[in-house]
Amino acid sequence: MWLFCLFFSMVFVLLGVFYFCHFQQDRKKYSQKVFGRVMEMRRAEDLNSDRVSRSVAWYPVYVYTADPSVGFAKYVSDIGGSEDRFSVGDPVVLFLDPDTRKVRSVSDFQIESRLRIILILVGAGFGIVAAILFVFFKGGGSMI
Image 1 (cartoon, one colour):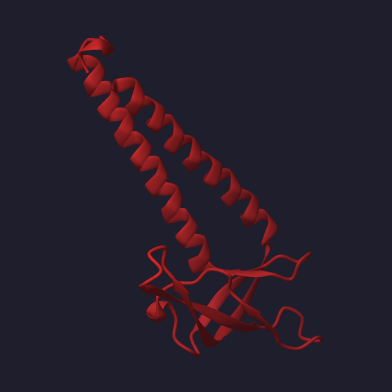
Image 2 (tube, rainbow, N blue to C red):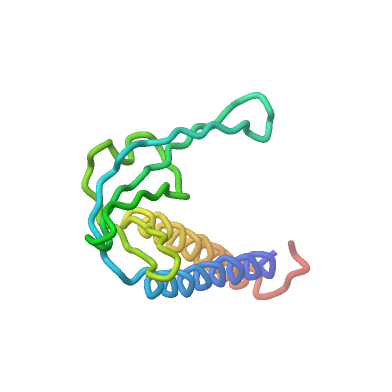
């Protein structure tokens, strides 16, 4: 049983580390800081796996100026959330990838940061349970 917990501990911690590395690459890629506003909130509705209930997500549409000579650009976020995440007209800080012209908001990075922390904490929890089980049963996996 303690080996089971140790295995899941390593899996979750490694996933957290993977997301940390991915986060660092994204921060380097989205290097240009621009200011914009939320122009609208688009609603997307999907059927849940039970094929009966529906889930609703709201995707902000940002308008920003990266280059004043070009004018305004519009970008629909690919990270949805609850309706109250943004209001129309809210000012936002965006990070632009100069190569692809995609933008990410600060809150997009915060969502990924929370996921990374949750994965590492779950992994640490499994590790603690594995250590307690190992000490309690003195490493003898045959008792469980």
